[in-house]
Image (cartoon, rainbow, N blue to C red; front, side):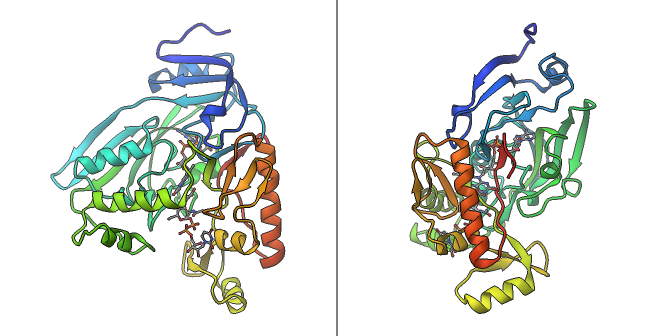
Length: 349
Ligand code: FAD
Ligand code: EPU
């Protein structure tokens, strides 16, 4: 067993149930909690870590442990937030990877810095936000990412990636394509004191109006998003889940048109570019009759067809089996392949 490293908590045979929002059982042979990224190089050189890309674990809200992780697990717990530049309107603010995302959003709004309001109440950490380019209510985080600071464990090099280098797309980035290449240590965001509110996504304008507000602030928009999310999505503290289990499929326009001809009520959104369309995985799953379905403790939320839930004792394997049956039924009925959004650990999709 390794010597203690200052600022690092090293745990062996660590339970992961409370570290993933599905609340499934898994164990890490070794888990290091690192508060100061200056200690990263020392941790990565420990015998338990040496030569192996770690699994970086944030809030565990976009992961499914279908088995124990083979890799050593790393959790960054740094809580630093500081302003790097401020010209009176535009602010560049840096947050450590370990900062809670929702807390950070609330902090920026309290300072009068606008931009992240539609992304309120997304669980997890700042460090994970660029991994899948988190998005909600018509906004994606890529619009506000200035720089992602990341350590490459294989070489120890510290990289500073601008938004273009991150190759962001819908639920996608360079980090998703090379999941073991980077440890995101901090993210710098460019925000503005001038609000540019986005109220056009279904439900937000109505929610704001129902709150009796005619001239909304960014904080009002965040409050509306929070209210809608609380109604639609189960709280992981009450019912284990990882948000949307499947990504919305992006298909060629011709395939979307053919499906639309058969199903005129099918929702269709713009894809990553003008030649593609984003379809609604929730709509397909709902039409296949899965909403509220339950197999033992593995199920589909009664309030949202895209959310797989753990009613208590489901294993990651049981949730993965259910996900496969759902995806197979959608493919059989609509000819559309749907893929998981969370990273599946200990099994392949
Ligand atoms: P984890 O689940 O711990 O990790 C997710 C992935 O990121 C893993 O591959 C992990 O290895 C990697 N990772 C994490 N931190 C780092 C790091 N520092 N460096 C390198 N890799 C890292 N997502 C949305 O986009 N929009 C939503 O509206 C949304 N709503 C949700 C609602 C609920 C109720 C839940 C449970 C989840 C929701 N999610 C949503 C998914 C999830 O909250 C986000 O993807 C979030 O960014 C994951 O953060 P995390 O810290 O929990 O990451
Ligand atoms: N729908 C159904 N049945 C349902 C739920 C939804 O048919 O049970 C249909 C409705 O037609 C609805 C459409 O699906 O209009 C879209 O539903 P919703 O607005 O809830 O959005 P979503 O596509 O299901 C996406 C993100 C969410 C994000 C919301 C709000 C993905 C995979 N999911 O959900 O992100 O919060 O939009 O912007 O893109 C997550 O990634 O974990 C997540 C929760």
